[in-house]
Image 1 (cartoon, helix red, strand yellow):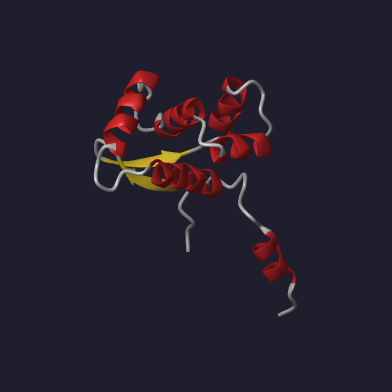
Image 2: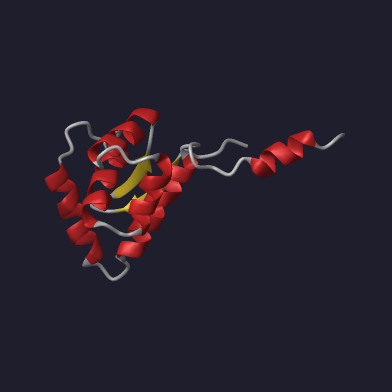
Length: 117
């Protein structure tokens, strides 16, 4: 079974938030050199700039010309919908980061592989 490497969210249309290594590096750079743990902490603080930048970098695989201003418009429209909660947006960003493999808890997989057959 293949693991999905993105999270789904409906903004202007259904979107896939997906992170690659270069996206995580750029997120770190834009947040003044945050470590991987620091990135998760900043997202947990729900810092508006961090949310916008993280969403931009997670969506740019779909649209390389996407701007921060357009992402802010998506967020603005999203939080004005009946289902739009900033916490749901943060959950989607966190899910995408988990699904990219950098932050995934591999202890379950490692322990399953270590068990004798």
